[in-house]
Image (cartoon, rainbow, N blue to C red; front, side):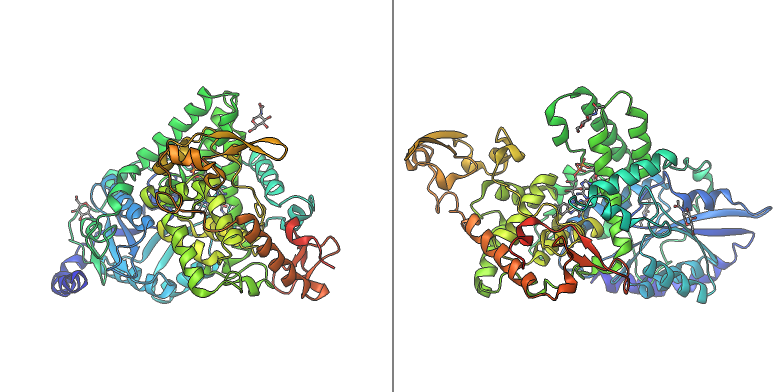
Length: 575
Ligand SMILES: Cc1cc2nc3c(=O)[nH]c(=O)nc-3n(C[C@H](O)[C@H](O)[C@H](O)COP(=O)(O)OP(=O)(O)OC[C@H]3O[C@@H](n4cnc5c(N)ncnc54)[C@H](O)[C@@H]3O)c2cc1C
Ligand SMILES: *[C@@H]1O[C@H](CO)[C@@H](O)[C@H](O)[C@H]1NC(C)=O
Ligand SMILES: *[C@@H]1O[C@H](CO)[C@@H](O)[C@H](O)[C@H]1NC(C)=O
Ligand SMILES: *[C@@H]1O[C@H](CO)[C@@H](O)[C@H](O)[C@H]1NC(C)=O
């Protein structure tokens, strides 16, 4: 319906095309805002388009953006909901001059087609944009644009601290730095040192933006499928039944550059206020959606961190900002990562989860995981928060991933897809990295085998579980129960299956009725998973494993492989 009416709107508009061309004494520069940098600040493409004024010719800026929406009927993903709001706010910052086109696939060809369409409609050859770190995509796109007579002005390194598409990263040294550690730690050390020598600085905001914007209303006829933010807002976040599931997420995550900056300041102030306390390392900045869609520049974050570092201990926050770069760097090294191609080969037998779990049982477990009824309170809390708010704290994400892969014997791909659909901060590089790691096939499967039932791991006072799993709200934290050796402490809230019947009854909890029985004994299923992984490795030829029993991986196709960090749980018993 929508598509049709928009198409006919475009056909009608062709008639007035001539009048666009007659605006000849002024030239128009197209600035394309990409969905990893929906911002005015630290935007080299926008700033250059404004600055590099040709002598004598008045130039106008026409901001455009493309929204990829493969299926109008499904209501899209949490990320789509956020993106639409971000576009709306960007449009406001651009005095309402943003033009938007909808594409159903974001391959280079379809993207180029719309960009060419927009440039031709404006009689403009120059198109300014920031490049992603995906070299293959960017060079393909640039090639098509040039073939069609356009003159792309591109800028790199905009969504990370370093530019991984052009900078050589000494990965081999980073990996070898300490063979027993995950490369994450040496990478952060490398990056911090590099930044100390050569700080990442955001470019200053352009002056004269307001004056340069193309305010001549051409109505939106720049694209094959032009849309306005208001109309897609109706579509995303609404399920086919008409439920507005996106509204809760919108409320929680206002999508503007101002809000992003406000969150950053608030977070740094909170760090300052809680100096020296243990909980500081648990504090979350809630900046991830802003960083993922580029409403906040990582370089600006870095600059603020530097400014605060004499007053506040920012080391843990800086480290996490560096992890972001790490994911992007790994992606530049393995461009196929975000297409679901595993970094480590040889684990294909585990690709669909454990072989001996029947398909229907897998479907049942996956459904329980997605809907937060696994019977593991921390996991259920996390999955329910994900559903309600599109977000979870890091440690809970790790716990959920670990249960899915190791405890439920399901495929990391299923988890990755669910997170991609439901995370408001969905970032293809980070999400793919984290899920491949959970599935043993990533760059750095560091968290494999973690004990997510330990409450001191994350939610010491149980507040998180009580908030999201309200049916367990009244359960006591710990009780002492008699056992052979005297007494043992049971963590009722974290392990309700071990809680004494009387305690459960007192609180009106009937496992299997008011709250699910745990879906598996995860210690047992986990050992099955590790046994399966070890048996996979056992069948490998010698060339796949180094003398320290680590997986050998080629960092560059055809090059000598290097031994990569491999979890002990699957190294053992390899003969
Ligand atoms: C299975 C799994 C999937 C994930 N998928 C995503 C995703 O799609 N998008 C995403 O942004 N994060 C993802 N993360 C990483 C992390 O959980 C979130 O970045 C973090 O929880 C966001 O909250 P915050 O902004 O308060 O983070 P903070 O802890 O305040 O960290 C600040 C910023 O550092 C970056 N960061 C933090 N942790 C990581 C990490 N492990 N890897 C890379 N960058 C990191 C993020 O940009 C984050 O906003 C995933 C983690 C797991 C375990
Ligand atoms: C941008 O805002 C203007 C003014 O509010 C509006 O007319 C226009 O449709 C908006 N652009 C998009 C792409 O929604
Ligand atoms: C952009 O790429 C060039 C090489 O093409 C490189 O010299 C430059 O450092 C890169 N920019 C950033 C910001 O990293
Ligand atoms: C800062 O905090 C980290 C823990 O996050 C700690 O290891 C480090 O020693 C602290 N640095 C200073 C200067 O206090």
